[in-house]
Length: 257
Image (cartoon, rainbow, N blue to C red):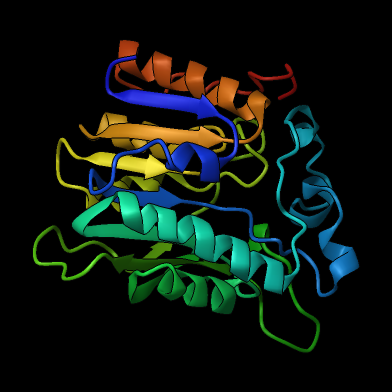
């Protein structure tokens, strides 16, 4: 498998199998348990909560799990896996965690409960055409990247704090909530060249693609066996070709463009 390892299963169990103090960066997009104002809203399918009307081409993609926790449940659960991430991290290692406006307070608390020093918040600005307006209020056109470190962060590159770009188009997207590759390509640089990047919620493997194509190694976990299979095939292709040839093919999984 070269410079990467993928496992399907629960991240808490799988993180326990990584040796302490061996990881250079954690870059992850965990389930937000968001997409609604009330508990009943959060219990809907991922497509109902996160996809705009008319995104029928994404019906070909599998659902993902773990996105219906209450805020208190999300805080407790996230504190546990973030503590495990802190354990496997080297001194000075970095972490980057995606979230939205609803989950930002919860994840910022969980990050610190887990032992990390919260260093700042990056902002991903989406095109207005990909966002939902709020009548009488502000556009919800941003998501966030909380980042921190295990102890002092004494070296590394100066990376962007904002990104203005769109998520992958529905025709080529490999995950319901796939993030822009441009953002991930910056975030994996929190690890030094040749360093190890871990993603406990890897989805379709986009973080792994960014890690491998930039000369880093990668370990990824995913509860969904369907998405783990997509990620495995995707990263195998990157190892062979040096590029994300699967991520660029319209409607590859399910045959719907």
